[in-house]
Image 1: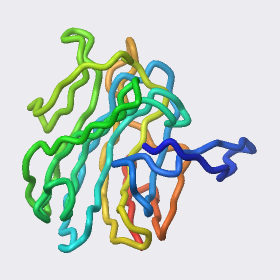
Image 2 (image 1 turned 90 degrees about the vertical axis):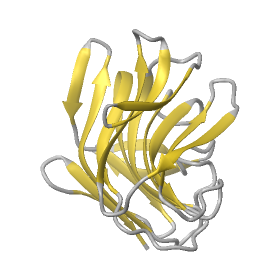
Image 3 (image 1 turned 180 degrees about the vertical axis):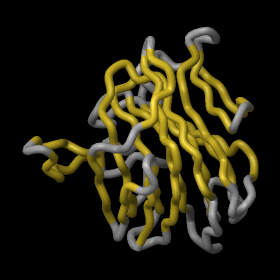
Length: 212
C-alpha cells in the first residue's frame, strides 16, 4: 500500500483520493476494489489460486485493510503470491505484508500453496489476544503487534510488480468484521486500476481481477 496517490474515479458524484498501489510496495500493475468502513477490524475472502505463470518477479492476490481511507499509513494484508523475488522460488505462497504505524515495512512468506485450489485467508485484529493475526482457514500462521487496532478501508484485488504483468484472481464471499459486528458479506464500492489491470463484481458476492 504505497504512499502515493492519484485523483480518479467519480462514484455517486464524489471524488475519491485513491492509493496508486495497495500491496508489496512496488506494484506497477494492479486492480483493486475498496470499501470504506468505520472501526474495521478484519477482512476475509476465499481465493482461487489458479495457475499463475512462471518467471515473473511477482504477482499477488492481496486481501487487506488500511488504517486510513487514503492507505497512506499503516496497513496489513495477506493472500497468495508467486514469483522469483522475496525468496519465493517461483512457487505459490501465502504471505503477510504490512506497513507499520511507525513507517517500517515487513514481508513474510507463510508457506507454499497448491494451484487450482480455493483457500480462505483472513487478516484481523484480535481483541482477546491483543494482536494482529493472519489466518489460513482455521490456522494462524502469523501474528504480531502494532499500535493501531482499527481501519477505515477494506481492499481486495490483484497486483503485479511490472506494468502490463500477468494478473488473475477470483475472490468469493469477501467479508468484513467491525467493532461489535460479526462477519458480514460485502461487495466493493469503488475501484482503481493501473498498468492493464481490470476488476469486476462476480457471483452474488465476489470479484474477478485480471490483466493485462
